[in-house]
Length: 68
Image (cartoon, helix red, strand yellow):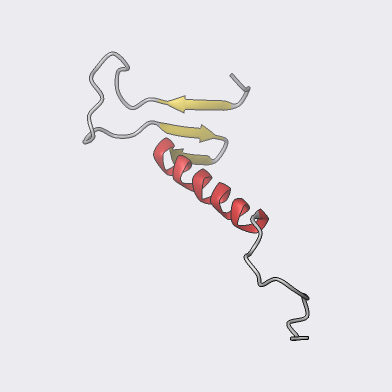
């Protein structure tokens, strides 16, 4: 594991995981965020990067938009 990173479980790992129990938190310095929220934020960043890289559909022909 990387030095300085710490996952803090809020319950015993051997117990059954239920939806109404507190989530596991990722603690790094002054940053404290739950793992599910971290995964959502990472997914949004990946989707944003894909949107920047993916080509937009365009009509065949010149790029200046003029008809010839």
